[in-house]
Image (cartoon, rainbow, N blue to C red):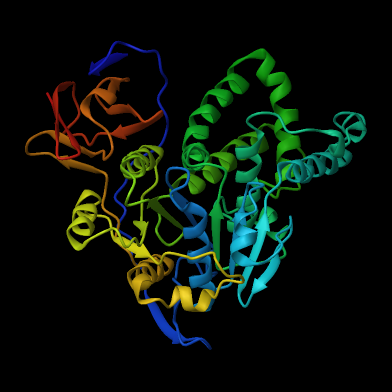
Amino acid sequence: MALLTFCPVLSSSSVLSRTTPNLVHATRTQTRTRSGTKAVTLAASSEDSDKSTKLVTFLGKGGSGKTTSAIFAAQHYAMAGFSTCLVIHTQDPTAEFLLSCKIGTSPVLCSENLSALRFETTRMLLGPLKQLKQADARLNMTQGVLEGIFGEELGVLPGMDPIFSALALERLVGFFGNVAQRNHNKDKFDIIVYDGMSSEEMLRMISAAGKARLYLKYVRNVADKTDFGRMAGPSLLRLVDEAMSLTNSTNLFNGNRSADIWNSVEKMLERGSSAFSEPQKFGCFLVLDPNNPASISSALRYWGCTIQAGGQISGAFATASPNLNTESEEELKNKFSPLPFAFIPHISRSSLPLDWVAITQNTVGESARNLLSTTASGSSSLMSSVTFDAARKSVILFMPGFDKSEIKLYQYRGGSELLVEAGDQRRVIYLPPKIQGKVGGAKFIDRSLVITMR
C-alpha cells in the first residue's frame, strides 16, 4: 500500500467499482395527455424489450426543498402520462400536506397516474423474514427454529433503515434483475420518485452494490479456502439461493451449484452497481436554496460525493425567489456548470388543496419540466468523471465540491489502479495499460484533480 498525496497514511481497503463513460442515449416520441402537457414515451430497445422502471431522487441540505422538488417531479411525470409512485421514508407529514392525500404503507392513488407510498422499516423487515422462513421450511435447515421468530415482535436497530429501504426499492425498480423479487410487486410503475431519510443514506445506497462486490470476493475466498467455509458455506448458500431464487436450479445441491450461486450473486451486484450510472434507469438531482450559501455549498459537495459513490448527477434545481436577480441567477448556473440548471416555482401553502396543474404549468418552471422530461426519456448525456490522457500519461478526475486537501490517493497491486478517497467514499480507478505506473504528481485545476503517472 502506498499513500500518494495530501495526508498521513490511513488504513483502508479498496472497492470494486469501475468508472466508465456515461454517454447513453435513448429514442423517444411525444404524445399529448388530457391535460395538454407533452408526454415523453420511451422506445423499446433491442436489448431490453420490457421498459424498465426509472428511479428518480434528490440530494441536498435539509430545508433546501427536497420533498417539494420530489413532489413537483412526481406531479410532472404523472401529468405527462407516466405511471408514477412517490415513495417517502420518513414520518414527516409534509408530503401528505402538499398532496392533500393520506399516505400509507401500500400505494395510495392520490391523482391520475400518481400514487404515493410510505416506507416503514418495522413493516419492511417482515418480508425478508417470511422468505427465509419459507426457504427453511422447504430445506429444513434450522429444524423449525426460524418458525419461532415472530417479525411483529422485532424492533428496528440503527443501520437497518437504509438496508431495508434498498430492498424495498429493488422490489419496485428491479435494478438487480431478479425476476422472483420483481414478481412480488403487483404494481408496475414507469417512474419511482424517492424522497429518502437523508442525502447521506441515498449516497450509501448508490454505492452499496459496488462495495458489496468486494466483500463478496473476500467472503467467497473464506468459503472456498478454509475448513469452516467449506463446512458451513454450502448450507448457507443453499438457504440464500432458495430464499432469493438466484439460480432457479432444481438440481440437488453440490459444489458446482455452489459456484453458480456465487457467480449469480456477483452478476446481480454488477447489474445493480451499473444501474446507478445509466441515465435511462436512474436520475439524481441536486436541490438548493439560492439564498442560502450553506445550501449551495452542500449541493456542490453532494455532487462530488455522488461521483465518488459511482453515480451521476442529472441536473440541479433551485426554488424561484423574488430576491434573486438575473446576475445572481447566471452566477449560480456557472457554479454548477456543466450541469443543467432549472428553477421550480415557489409554492405558496396559504390555501389548500394546492392546484398542482397550475403549479407545474407555471412559466417559471418550464426549464424544470424540460429537464425532468429529458431525463425521463434517458436521452440526456452525462459527462464522464474520469478522463485518461495517454499522450501526457495523466488521469483527470472531475471532483466538484472538494479541494486538494480533502482528497487521498492510494495504490495497491502495483500501478494498475488508483484508489481515490474523498467525501467519506472510496472508489477504484482502473488504469489503461499505457498509463499504468506510479503517481508522479497531482494538482487541482478547475474542480478537477490532474494526476501525472510515471
